[in-house]
Amino acid sequence: MSVLDFKTAEVFEPLLPPSRYKGAWGGRGSGKSHFFAEKLLDDSMYERGLLSVCLREVQKSLKDSSKRLIEAKLAQHGLGEADGFKVFRDVIQCPKDGLMIFKGMNDYTADSLKS
View 1 (cartoon, one colour):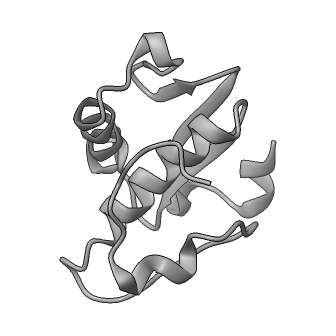
View 2 (cartoon, rainbow, N blue to C red):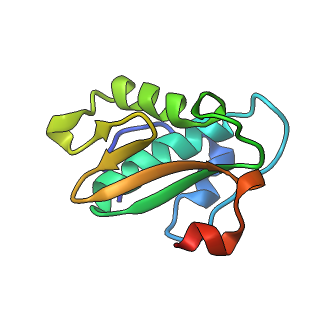
View 3 (tube, rainbow, N blue to C red):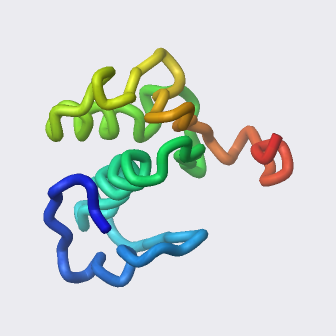
């Protein structure tokens, strides 16, 4: 069930059903980041209180993160504080105590991220 009305390319349709982990790989310019940004916003609206981490292999600063893309998708879909989204310098607060954080894997291990 989708809360937002966003178009999904046929290649990404297998990623729409619920799953604990989702991933895609491939070349640049295929739309992966845009698909996952919209899917994350949709999931955050549907599953209130969702805690998410957006990872990059190398991320030296928030400038290198996907945060700016997610902020652009919030604006594109007209989502803001009235919908439960509040943008801070290093995190995005989501509906009903949900949270998106942005990290680079070069500085963390899977165990340190769990905490």
